Length: 290
Image (cartoon, rainbow, N blue to C red; front, side, top):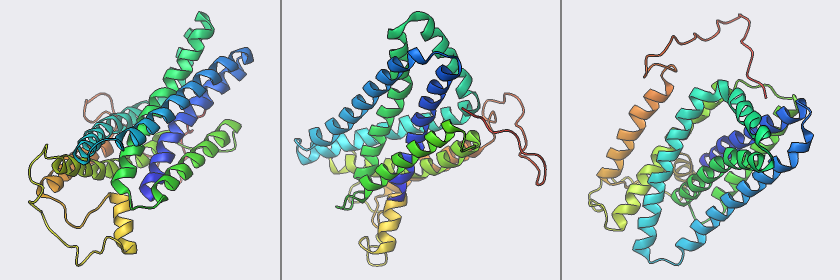
């Protein structure tokens, strides 16, 4: 449940901040007349994301077992690819997100109502589709026959909306770059579990070999139905009897991805110098604001 809450919070907060930045800019520049097209674009984006999630859930139920496993495994891997790209992109652009959105909005204002709707739709729609796909993959990976994964996602999204509103009202000031770095790192750990689960789905669909070649089996030690077994599965998508390929893929993704993600910004490209963190007792740097 915690991993699904984290997904809902992390993905939902991105969309909330985008909405806050767009709305705040229009209000501050006296362009309240442009709010309706913005809200229209946001509503269309949310509806499409919700419809996409429903299509994934109900459409997959009509397939055979092997087809379901093949679809689930393929979409899980796609979700991991998209989320990995997203967390790296957000880590690099969090400090400049406000200016980037303002520039797009200025161009849209000059073009008219249709451009405003499209700007809001594209800004929120991408986040919505990524969220729907990754939530679907994660919920299926962590499913334990209870509604807890979905409850976790719903609570995360609700928290994200509340934080976004507080951020807009000026009641909350957070360092966005630091927030997205830490939550992004935790999301990489969750994504590693989703990736391993996706590989297992492909093995069950007979598309990838090695289903019976287990790396270890500690089912007698770690009971999947126990509270700690449920906790491990919910947070890390842990299973007590993974295949060799699952463990291999999990390690090959998690270790280098997490190391690169937590490295100083610009380390991989060698661009510029990384600002050192504030010394204890020194004046903290001003957090980005919407």
